[in-house]
Figure 1 (tube, rainbow, N blue to C red):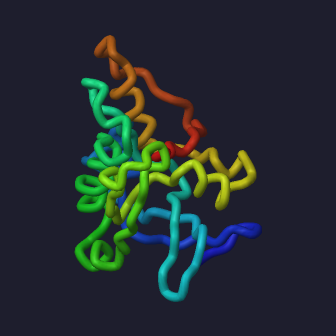
Figure 2 (figure 1 turned 180 degrees about the horizontal axis):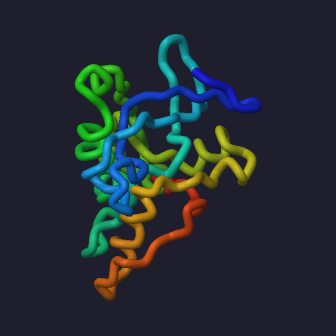
Length: 173
């Protein structure tokens, strides 16, 4: 655990973040590096965390427009499958606590999910990050490369985002 001003951090898991092999891009060919998490809340041995940097890019809704609710979102599917198995070893995966989440845009109990990794809700973001500046995070080189690939519909993926590119956290509600 480390401290920065009034914010506590912990390193947990490893993920592709920077160009570690020197080929000019951050991707799955690079070494994973420790993920730094901001501690939002402590409850005994359990920590509620948010990544200190924006780690990877995924669409919220699917191409066909489905998935506008957290339960069906592409981002949720990616976070709770690919991201978990990529960022955490088996011991770390066991340490992740499953949380019951409701979709605040719906009163339907069918929209409740149980997830180990998830985006903050709007209410959680207001509660834990009341300062708008905290809602912005520096992006990893891996994210910057993914974002250019995902958002460039012309097929040209040679563009790049500035090294100190910041983005807002995606929220689930």
